[in-house]
Length: 212
Image (cartoon, rainbow, N blue to C red; front, side, top):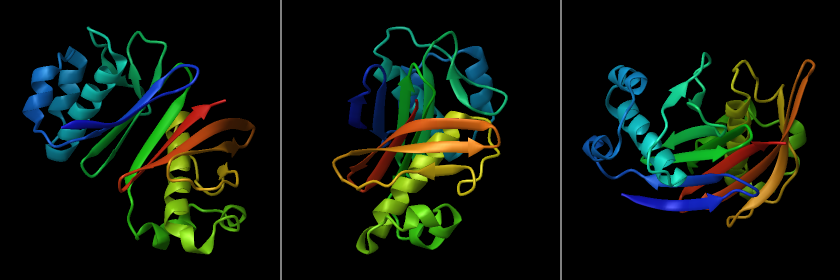
């Protein structure tokens, strides 16, 4: 078990990545769950249960609070902290869990880097985004763009967004150590701009979105 990445978000907020190598028993011993959480946990099986437990543990760990707050879901399935002004987002990939918490609407995505992303890229990369991608760096850029749009989608939180029609990211230079760029959601009369951050951690790509 290990916290493999943590970063403070300026001016407020925190994000982190946990490598899940322990069993469910560890998290169950460390977490004091609320009634609503226990009911949700009963509906989950195997992998989903492990993901649920690890994300709640990581959220509480990063909060540095003695007493944790209940992590629930709204009518759209978006997670939130009960009686808290902080917005949260959660992501899972393989044995890894990522979370983010901030005073503004946020989204986070983590992915294990895989060649498959190159085959499915036409489903989510726009032509005006593709022209800015270096030919020998497709895999990393595709992961960054997917993560950016998935993060904005989670921040939006009401579903029914098309990754090509309603979402766009600005041109950027992928930097393994971390890079900022911008994104936007445009759907009918709705418009929202986002600050995006992408970083490679081992064989993972982490992306988060902050509503501007």
